Image (tube, rainbow, N blue to C red):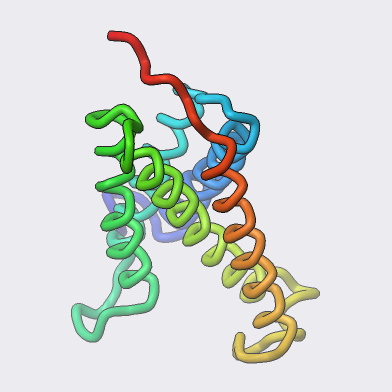
Length: 167
């Protein structure tokens, strides 16, 4: 049991938090692409993405070696720290705008990457296409997601130039 919940309930909670992170992250990216700063959506995106990573460490797992999910959680939290600093401490001024865009997109990408993994594991019609996740359909799906996020990053850097918030 995790925090007094069954593992199924905790898995559902973790999944819902992850989906909230992905959904709100897509809204935040849309804001970047249209040059808008969505403060509320951004706070929910960053908060739920932090929670996704933190709750990922609460699943029962061996202490050694590190699992791929734990490595993703460490990377995600490492990316989110400068992203949060860029937004809330340095107000996206100068280099911090780039750090925020890159960090937000990378954090969202990591969640989507895991979402694709989970889709191939849990969705009945996808599972036979890539039972070991080394098959071409899985690899193609992940490459398409990566290329999409790279393109979004380039466009966001060109278009997202928000004015600093007034105190």
